[in-house]
Image (cartoon, rainbow, N blue to C red; front, side, top):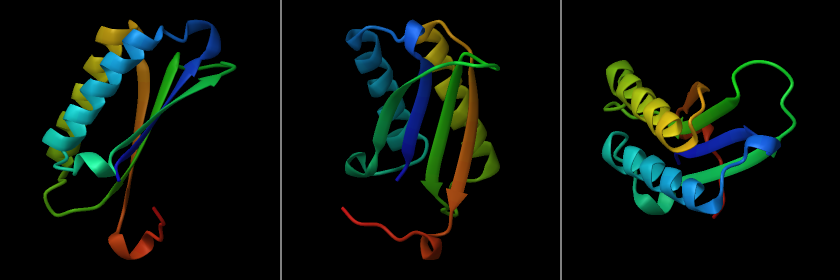
Length: 108
């Protein structure tokens, strides 16, 4: 963890080069601001049929840690918002969901 899933309308899906750039930005935010180990960072792009709302929806799931305070999460979301705007030219709705370690059951 953290897991970042970015939903992008299929007709606005950027080229692989732009997604690679965004992936690097996201990984840097996760390892820098959220202090996650790079091997625990997952970033996914999902092509969707857009119905209504912001053109991009970013969903972040992360483990709660004492150092991931509201101001830290605000810096992370601002950085993610800027990265999405810079690489995709689109505005995202961003939602972060924190989970206590005792509530996470995982494999691999």
